[in-house]
Image (cartoon, rainbow, N blue to C red; front, side, top):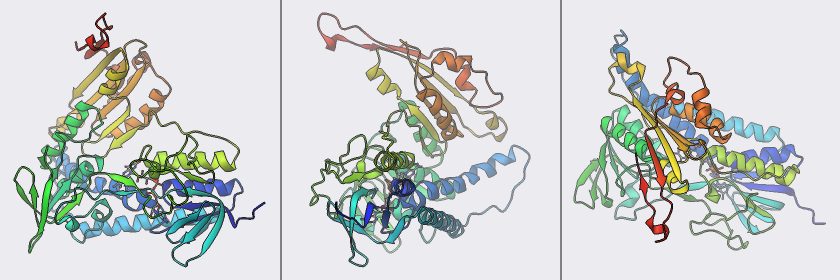
Length: 473
Ligand SMILES: Cc1cc2nc3c(=O)[nH]c(=O)nc-3n(C[C@H](O)[C@H](O)[C@H](O)COP(=O)(O)OP(=O)(O)OC[C@H]3O[C@@H](n4cnc5c(N)ncnc54)[C@H](O)[C@@H]3O)c2cc1C
């Protein structure tokens, strides 16, 4: 039998890699993990965690103005960007150190180096040129921002990687993209006092989310002062003595101190040596894996964003854990990627679980919609022109709740809890049977009795399936 130096070599110490390494070591495997940047990966260093801290920072603006309606007099509030960046840095450094020490406590050998695959059982450590032999390799290298469109002057732009550490708060920020990262940063900077422009190819933000919520988020951005430039793209970025001139396809030229490109992320597989090891990638460069995160090569597995299944931290963590339990713990587990609650931390924020109305109507013959739009109690005194939106999507045939979508304060917290009910297969009748908790916004979820719309697919007649139509109430 071949004697390898380690049983498992993990490339990338982000959400998925760290969890896989720790659990595999706990199952008795000899594990080594390599990280080329900072332990903790995207989520901890330049993703979810620092972003949420900045979301909190941005929302104080609203809290201060809301407070007046409740009798408070506030004066002299001002915002210090370098202070926020320093506080954020302190926190992510603390978290990164905890991740490292947890790995070490678990007996994992941590190497601060880029690693590449030499062959199916050997990893090359770029820092010192060492070659490590391993029984198995786990690719957990995450994803990286796409730097598109490729226009003249594109190199002047930044991505979400750099936005967290700008030396000063930009006066004018132009963000390209309409996905959740673009939207979240637009909402953050608009509240911190920056003039924000959002440029996107599509006609609305957040493709793939429920249409009513997309519109609500768009209106929220406009209300916060974000200038929306839909249906267009950059044509060039020109450096000026102060900032940049950014030209758009419809002829406008905008001024900005920074241009942030947030047009998507692609799996981090370039230069890893995967092709020479015979690993099959998909059209986006993602490692193709089976339900147990195994690639087509017997000794090579992959988890997290690099597999392009669902690019979220809890998903990467679950995949890493399931991989370690399957391979080293004798407990095979295939991660299920359906009914995953998710949020967009715009302000107002969006929380969602399950099917959108569009998806439900494409899949089910009869879909019932329950929707409520109301002014939250807090707004009665704050005077804020704010509406909360809640939408429940139900299979009209079985009464099963297919999806719940919320736009408003604490929507993400509600979506997490609703995820349990929807995952368990709760029916609308179960929601109705649940006593309301008063006074809350969430009570609306169990008191919506009147159907807003029913969509029924007509049974195809003799002319064939194309004759089917969908009718709203
Ligand atoms: C701005 C932003 C906000 C986000 N917000 C959220 C959110 O609110 N909620 C949520 O669930 N998800 C969020 N995400 C997504 C989330 O961060 C990712 O889904 C998650 O980090 C994926 O984990 P991973 O282990 O696959 O990869 P990562 O966490 O990206 O870890 C990969 C690691 O591999 C390292 N690496 C790459 N190549 C090599 C190599 N050759 N050798 C050594 N090391 C290497 C990288 O440096 C990195 O540390 C956000 C992402 C971004 C960019």
